[in-house]
Image (cartoon, rainbow, N blue to C red):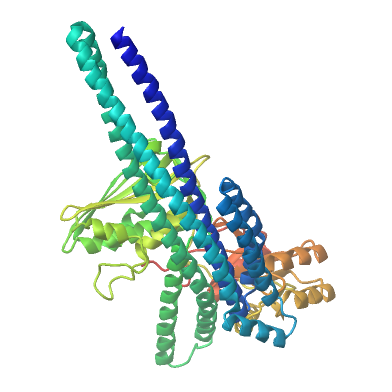
Length: 623
């Protein structure tokens, strides 16, 4: 009876303490949630100040649009915070003050970004420079800082309560053990039973502790990967913007040089050689831009259903020439390999880049092995890799017997412009380009390496369905540039005058009748006056009316009008999630006269839709 009474008392006490600990932990978590919400609101307010200043300084309409969205989101954000702290009178008072401060800040931001004349804009900038916006922001930040301090105070109190409960639980368990030993002295059999129960409870507690430590370590790894992904996404945004302007310049350089070279027949050989050198330099710049776009996941992909075994077999000779005679290239191709959906040109480029890296890592000779296999990435593998989805993949691994990499180098391997090669032997964009291509395709890339043992890079491409397609891509130099047929009229629309002049000159040299317009409104007027126009060749990124909007309006006037889009920046109205829209004919900048001639002919003949460009000087440079 004594043992039963003691066990009952201990059970009731433990249940009470466990319930109290659960309530205390709930309030601790509640304080942490409030702090996270306040932190997010602080970043929200700082983003409003940043976009407010940025729009007044640059006049960028995107910043004004983002500012309006941020201001519109202030109310719901404050409502969320108010609901979180509704149990605390101090915090409710802080919420009232915070609403007033944020209302003043939002009103000031909207007022200063809506000037109707130059004087008003100057006055808005003067207010910003005088610190009015910063003062309003700091007022709101001060209130949110007080709220965080209040939650810090509550968090300390609640954690102390939790510690007291845990201590009480420990004392209660200790008293239970002591009492059990006393009872065991009186009733040996009952004591042995209790001893077994306590041993089992101890083992369960140890297992739970080990599981908790493993969960904490896994969470830390995932958080580190998320931070790395966010950093690489920010760099991707930067490179995408650089590529936009860079490609416009390359379109002028490459196009003008190509026209000049065509008109140099009979001129001195030295002059043509100089132009050829300049052309080669521009080609390298175009290749660099393509790598930047690949890393930022903004290159337009034209995926096909592929048989990877056939693609690797077809590249064997190219890879052997790339590696050199002192290197052995082996392929191990799996039977029954699944199909995959990928851009064949970009996948070939990826394998060539990996072959070059393997060659550079094996100074003096070695062996490179390309292997294919079906693979399944399960939940356990993906749990520590936030950017990977579980499922079926087609795996391509490229292994070498080179020097290998340290863990520090592996951690930075996919960062753009990071390289361990000597100056002049690498740009540091090869692996970052592969990283961007794999993510844009929906796949995954992983590196396994040991110093002195070699390196393996594994590409995981998502499994596809349907019959494999063998892409038939001929080299540009193997085709004669097709010229115009009688009566074909092309309307060129481009807001950049030098690019427009190049396109007009190139098309006229090919025999087409060419009209041009600097914007969408002028183009529509020309179409209304001259409906005999055969094709619209338009840039996509234009002010007021973009290329997609122009094409829709033009086809309302001339339903049978053929349309060919071009741009140097692919995150726009005809490329979504890295894939060209269905039914779209697209020619990326920069392009040569040869590429322009082939694409225009394809579109006029009824093709040219979502078809990859042949490997050539401006777009197919391999490095």
